[in-house]
Image (cartoon, rainbow, N blue to C red):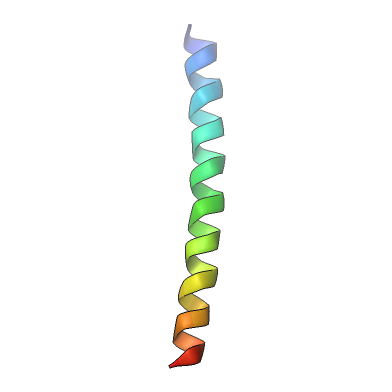
Length: 34
């Protein structure tokens, strides 16, 4: 059970990192447009 949770946790963390990268890209685009 614990290994399953850590697997979900690592998957969730990597997903969050990807989402943060996308948000940062969008933010950079918005700042560039201003």
